[in-house]
Length: 327
Image 1 (spheres, rainbow, N blue to C red):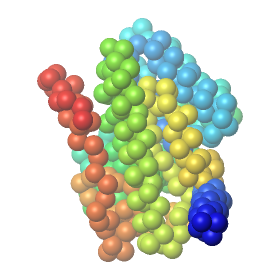
Image 2 (spheres, rainbow, N blue to C red):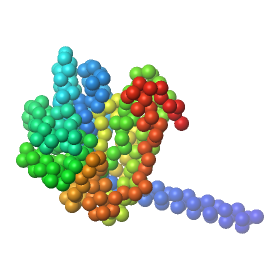
Image 3 (cartoon, rainbow, N blue to C red):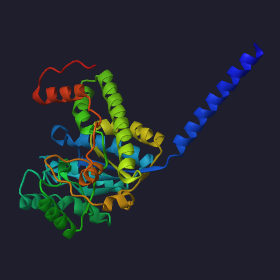
Image 4 (spheres, one colour):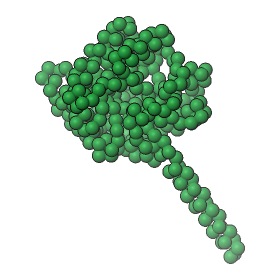
């Protein structure tokens, strides 16, 4: 009997040692990521008062500042101009700079390059930089980043290259993304649950969002290693909404557990991956790992599936239909 107990004890110790080594290996993984947040001053600005936008912005930026996480916010200036609320909305935008963050251009009215002429799109870019440039200059900063609405870079390569040349002439660096967990799809459903004080649904949405984020990172970390031989400095796409304002701390914790350190967008763009050949064009925008893969003739396969119940609830809200039951 003594020998059996000793053997079991040795097996147990070896299992503990193996688990400890695995934890050490995971914690030793060094990854870097830049945080970018689109659709400022708020994704749902048409349905929010200026005071609510200020409240949301304060909560979001306080978490980022307190955790010393750099970020760039991308602005749709059309959302600033609502009768009686312009001052509050511009104040919310200025808070980004007062808190030590940076702002970029996301066109005036979130216009897709795939849906208008190149000339009209260029006018949207110029019109979308007026207030943002002024605020940056007041903080002795320069407007230097542009993010394509919908990630649409053009239906054909000629249009894409002409648009890129135009942006370069105006002093812009394009802000690509590599990670996108569709927080915007969750956000509308979350806002509705928040207004109704449905805490159970809010938590279910947050849990689903974090799980889906994990699936996205699992897939694209592995895919990037297979595609280019390593994991580049990542750039994640988020949006200005209550989901992030209330829960971005949980997202940051998830990323830290995966070994990520938070870096500036400028640092991320210093990665050689962002200089690789990229000839992606198409009707739908996508992340830049997909760009590189499709350029190399290796499009992503068997990608993660977004939760259908969230899509159904979002569509129901949009069309004012009864939502389907949650799983």
